[in-house]
Image 1 (cartoon, protein in one colour):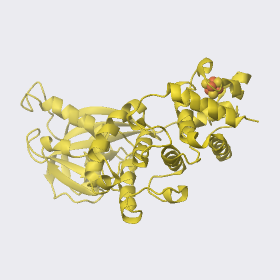
Image 2 (cartoon, protein in one colour):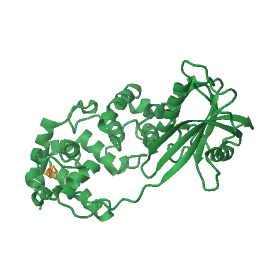
Image 3 (cartoon, helix red, strand yellow):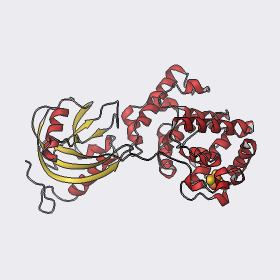
Image 4 (tube, helix red, strand yellow):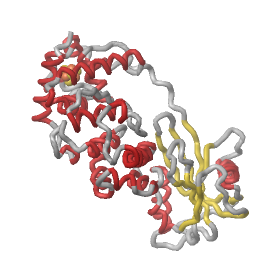
Length: 384
Ligand code: SF4
C-alpha cells in the first residue's frame, strides 16, 4: 500500500527546491496561464526540454494569445514549428485555437471532458492544463511519470500493455488526489521533473531521490529493471528519392516544391517531391521519374546526386537520396500533393519544410554559394 499523502508532500517540497528555471514556469505550478501551459506541454511531447525553450519563446512572441494563434495563417504556424517534428501537433494547436475562439469565447475550457474535445488535447494535456493552471486534481501520465510510478510501485508488467496503462493512470490519480489542494500542480510537475532529473531511464539517482523511502523498486533493487517494456519490433527502413527539379538551368532557375496533403504525416509542409523506392523501380532515378509523374504529372530528367540524408521517424527510418532534375514536359498538377510552386532558392526560407528537406536546402546553398553552378569544382552530371 503506497502512502500517497507522504509521497505527494515529499515531491512538492523537493520540487520547490530543485525545479529547473524554464520560461513557461514564471508563475508557480497551479497558478499558470493555461495558454502557456498548453503550448509548453504540447511542444515538450516527444521533444527535449532544452530544444523547446527557444521554440517556446519565439512562439510566444509571435502568438502571445489564443486569439493571435487562431488568426494566423497555417503556413506561418508550421514555419514557427519547423524542426520540432510531429507537425500534427502544430496543426492541431492552430485548429484548437480557432475552435476556442469560435465556441468558447477565446478561453480554454476548465472541464476535462470539454478540453479533451479540442483537437490534439488528450488525457495527458488536459490533466497538465487543469492541474498546472488551476490546481484541479487531474492526473498526468507522460513517459517520465510512467517510469517514476512503475518504479515506485515496482510494476513488473510491460507498461505499454493496456491493463498496465490503466493501472498507471489510477496511480497517477491517487497521487494528485492525495496532494494538498494548493499543491496539485506542483506535485504533477514534480513527478515529471523527478523523472527528468533523478529517476532517469538508466541508473536512477536513488540516493538523491525524495521518495526513495517509499519506492518499492528501490527496496527490491529492481529499479534498473523497471519499467518493463514489450520487446521492440524491428524498425523498417526505406530508401527514398527526392528531386530538386529545376525549371531551366540548374542553379539559376526556379525549383519545384510540393505541399504534402493536410491529413497524414508532415501534413501541410512543403518538400522536394519524390517517394519511396519500390521493387519494380530499376534504380533511384527511375523511382524519382515515376514518383514525379504520379504526384505532379510531369516528366523530368534526373541528374547528379546532391546529398544523402538519414532520418529516423517514430515507426520507420529512411535514407533520402536527393537528386538534381530538370523539367522536360508537362504543366505540374496536384495529383498526389496538396499544391505545388515554382520558387527561387531565396524564397525557400519562407516555406515550412521537414528537417530532411532543410538538409537538402543546406546542401544546395553550400553547392551554389560563392561559385557559379556547373563549374568543375561543383560538377553536375548531365541529366539522364
Ligand atoms: S528511489 Fe530511485 S527508482 Fe525509486 S523513484 Fe526514486 S529515483 Fe526512481
